[in-house]
Length: 233
Picture 1 (cartoon, rainbow, N blue to C red):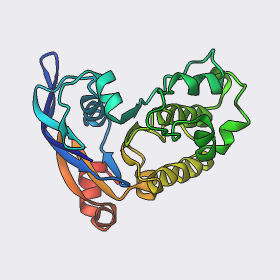
Picture 2 (picture 1 turned 180 degrees about the vertical axis):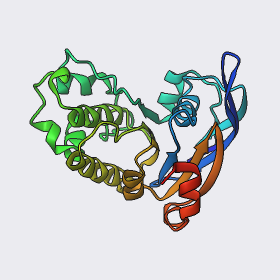
Picture 3 (picture 1 turned 180 degrees about the horizontal axis):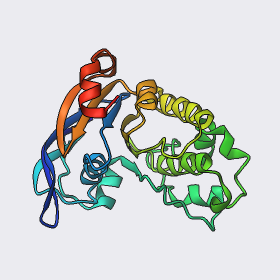
């Protein structure tokens, strides 16, 4: 589904990513782990075309999309949910969802509001409420649901657990696993190791813009020295 090789990214003169390589398959949840400033969000933005890579390749479903504009990459089938969610506070839940709708193609009904409500039942009762009146967890659900209105094959989630209460985290984990069962590939950046462990099949650890570990989540949790060295667990 996604194959990233040798990605280098700069912000001005600052070298942020150093040869980052990763992959993600259909129906797989992959976690990018690391401390603040490790380069997790920059990796997602580089894949999405929001930050131009200086070198390296991003290949999605066999097509090189490196450096393409974000709107073109979105049309190819990649959805991005930023850390700050970016919902429209003055629009209702339904209106926020409609913003994300793309024209139906080939009778594809997966983008319908009803399908999204099926994945996020709690949003149905909130359909008439304005986005700005929702709780943090509700806003996160809405941000993901709005992105799903574009029917992405790959979903990029930037810190989906940030600021959420434990009960809300449990619900968010269930939603992510449900999307996985639908065959959507998910790449998420995350600092909450417990949350990442609940939803992820594999993990990459970034430190100072470099991949320091790649493996299954089960293998990572069985390697305490790696957790201590790179995540201070």
